[in-house]
Image 1 (spheres, rainbow, N blue to C red):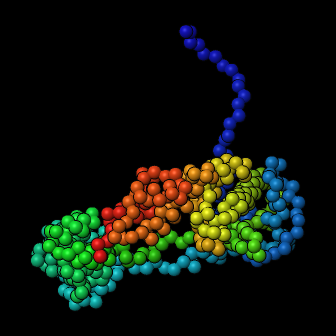
Image 2 (image 1 turned 45 degrees about the horizontal axis):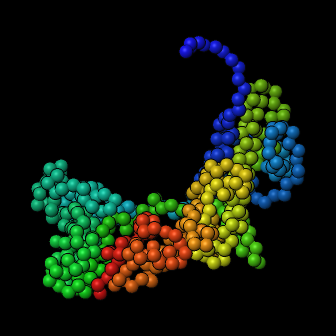
Length: 460
């Protein structure tokens, strides 16, 4: 075969990721509060944008400068009918939603340090206690050994151990432990009515306790299984990670619904919650400056900002429209869910919604990811309504979410002395017409954080 070089012209079609397309994709996947932050930043950067502070009626204004390929969108709503000669709003005075978020609370270290400050300690003891507190991880466990602390602080090992005992006596109980066994023991010592064999189980048989081997524990301890069960129940009420019980408000995630669904006189109404975000429109003053600009540099700058503002408003409207259409489809498709609950949830794929709305599947995925909807039944993530189809005997199929709910109900109602195994649950679901295997039951049980039948069994 002979290889040679040649040149030819070929006409092809391909999709280019323009800056406008990237912006539309980014806005589509932003939750409502992140969208608020993004729009606030765009408002500060682009003088062509103006904040709508009050509900103002707006008269139609022709937009001769809009691009020819603009979609069907009423851009007149982005302008104001107020006089164009007034000055723009001072952007520095705008206040974001951060004022409504409470200040972060104390961390575990700060709470412990406050308790140490209330004790009568020598400067050296206070320094050692502070060092121990700073060496705790987020779960409240001490990551350094006493010899290491003694060497690093150049203090005696006895003083480190005494100070550690003092720190371990602070709240929350179990803090500053070096392992799980010590953590549980520290908490046990806070109670006076500890069941028999509890401390011995924690000291010597934590592995058997984790596996739920009650008969083996009873044989090793020479005790009745009912006594062992009471001891195990008591231990399971303890906190294995005491540091996590101290809430750090700075890590709190606030969830705001992007869409609300209301039942008004038997009809479902969809409301896209854009009241959190600033309402923006084109500033007529800067638009007038664009038309009267003499300098080419000034005109080019204002033209770029004008185009960016138009694309931003278009992307915001496209995001609102997409969320509205998807939610409207979900209400129509999952109508029985809103009337009867999770048992009536139908299987649904992203592709089904994409085909119904004539959009790409990735658009639906971006639109529902991280978004929440407020319904009369509570707040749900939009992804909650998408589930895998499980085949049934009647051929209609059932959603995996519904199957998980059935599994959960079976476990709640089972006899705790003889809990269902995965195989028995699979057989019970098959009797209800659901074609499911034992392996799938085990997978769903783990996703629901339900223990195995061995660990669920009670002997008392």
